[in-house]
Length: 347
Image 1 (cartoon, rainbow, N blue to C red):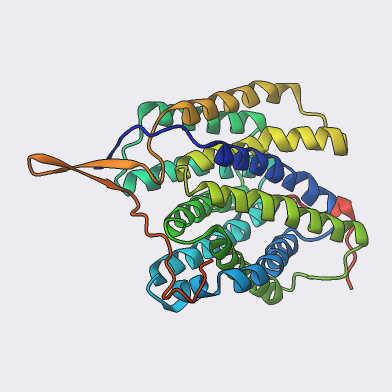
Image 2 (spheres, helix red, strand yellow):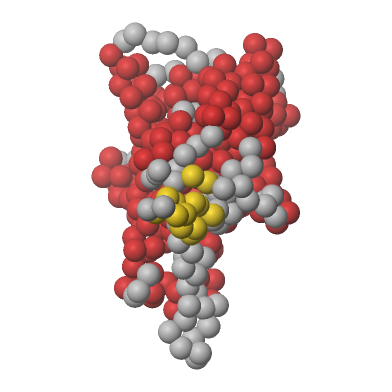
């Protein structure tokens, strides 16, 4: 078991990145609710369009690093990038259908258990999480459950939806965990390019195989998809991925729960969906849980770990930081229509 030692506070750039990421992902739910298109198609396009934006920059500035990740000495980090893409596709592919089988409230509450799975993954990796972190995780998840008005269902169809929503939470935790591993040596640009490309390929294949339309939407829907691409995907997910270089995956997962009140506020102002008064205690509890996790001075992905070796202590970083280095000095690392009332929302 590794024991994490305290580390200095997070730098202002990382804190700003996380703040912008929370605001960006908070727009996801309202935009998806507004867009008149199938949720899986929206998930495909937000990843595919993101790759279209990132790939030219990655090929121009990170070609050597991409080659190293795909077939060079950093293949293990490249594999982690690809596995993160698979996990992200599994998250979209399980949670979105769960909304059609069970209630939106139950599906949202169950997928909000991601930090619990993230904590279990961290524990399985040998990290000792402090009691306050577990308390914060529990408070945040309970707050999300209360805020979304989770209810219990008894039908077999609803149970299947509940299981899919839980699978979506596990997949989201895996996505963050693989991303943390990949970011130990891969740049944000290279990691997100590979991850989103794998996710888009898998989701596109599922859409084609299941007959989900990928075109034929109206202009407002395409604008909403563009907003999702620029906001929730390129700013939100990518900045969370950037923060994984400094913060624990567990912390990122709990911070991402701030999307719940953020999305509620945007939906209130933009779509006129006022939050239920009964949801306010849950939102407060969620914020308290986030503060408990973030305020605790614990080691993150780049923290110093003290490992007991024989009669002495051996100090090292975990995961080991192996930043990419170029092979030579000459290479710089450097038509179907949908009505809005017919669509389901998803994150």
